[in-house]
Image (cartoon, rainbow, N blue to C red; front, side, top):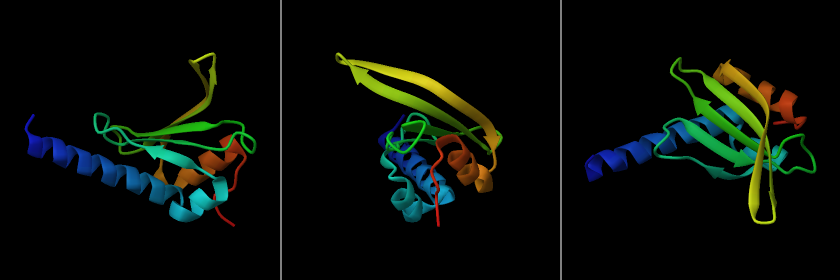
Length: 116
C-alpha cells in the first residue's frame, strides 16, 4: 500500500466517522449526552467509538460500524479498569440500523436524550 493510498484511506475513514456523528446530532448530541473521546480506526473504515458518562447512562461505551448493506451496527458496552486490567462487557447489539434511526436506538439503549 502506497503512502497516497494510506492518506486517502485515513481521509475517507474520517469523513465516514464525521458523517456518523452528524447522523447522531453533531455538536448538539455531544452537549446533550456528554459523549467524548470519539475515535475512528483507519484499518476499519466506517467505524466510530466514543464514551458516554456512566453516571447518567446504562452503558459507558458505544461502537458504531457501517456494514456492507450501507446500514449501521451499534454495540453498547460497559467498560471498566480494575487492577490495570480492562474489562469490556457487551450490553446490547443492534444491527442494520438506518441513519435516521441511530438517535432513537441510542436514546432507548442509554436513556439519554440526544436533543431537546
